[in-house]
Length: 475
View 1 (cartoon, rainbow, N blue to C red):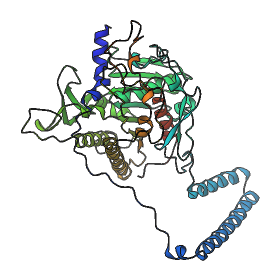
View 2 (cartoon, one colour; view 1 turned 90 degrees about the vertical axis):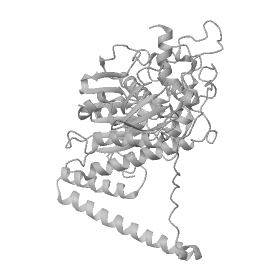
View 3 (spheres, rainbow, N blue to C red; view 1 turned 60 degrees about the vertical axis):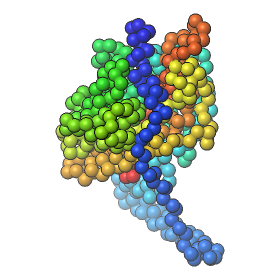
View 4 (cartoon, one colour; view 1 turned 45 degrees about the vertical axis):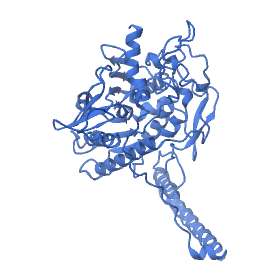
């Protein structure tokens, strides 16, 4: 592949957002505020006697509960067979664990951790898990292989605010998806996460690439097989989830032509075969776009010269396409309504273009942001709110649909953890040895995707926790 061809198509992913980011006529809606904690009772506020009464009541209740539980367990082990007693005791203790409301790992239905809030903490060698070249990650994201000299971006781990996030366990993941088809659907961040997962699994499991695009640089549809567990992993590039032409086909085109009444054909044709689906989109909505429905233009975004067409922003099309995709997977559009699947909606992962997209120093940071150093932007927060709202609506529909109560719709909220990692992008090391002939004045940089290995591996650590949790999304 020529360097000019590689640069042109890489720009479709990495520069799309940087080129259009200054114009943010997005039609934002008012952000919802967080609920306030339940007020304390007036009696408790007025005197300490209320606290004493509450303590005594709780102490007495706890003593009575322990006594009852002890008596029940004694009868179980005295009058029942050993196996039956242990089974009953395990179920009983699990029930009380669930009722305690403490943060657990979700494997027994316990309350799960909020992985979206936290901070990056130093952990030497934590991210040095695999060789991106050996697992065939995209060339532009093999930062070490491309000569990046600083590797400190691999020495951090995500520390959630309220619990621990276990390191990725390939054996646990492959066991959770045994016999299933795992699909990543969406823009190039979906591909970035999918290839990270392939690399993480490849450290412990044999696998083979069973299909790829005729032009390897395109990476619009790739598929791997993990034969020991009969697992298929596919990546479908569909930046709007629906059919789109123009710039997605040829980056030289000035705008996207998006059809809001027709899902992208390749992934939607395979949807009935999917068991675990990760949806990730958002970056292409910033680019000038014209939106069609039923053969008519119904709106545009960031397009000049269309005076008779309203700018409908990016939020409305983002919501509509996500809703269509979820309906196809777990709603009335699902072909096999008795098939249960887990759909995970990933939130927006921000880019870190601090200068022009072709400035060699546009994302040259070598450490994560500290807490408070960079806040999540309003647009990113609103996209996250839409993702959560649509996921909750789809989950409720899946539970209420006849014969489909087993499907899950969850949210993989990566916005904050991703926004704090300006150091984790390839930058100029999307190219092989970019400074071999000196420092150029202009050089395309990738400040959108993450190095592989890199922070994107954390997305899959959280995905593993989602898949091994039995708790369905209720929010």
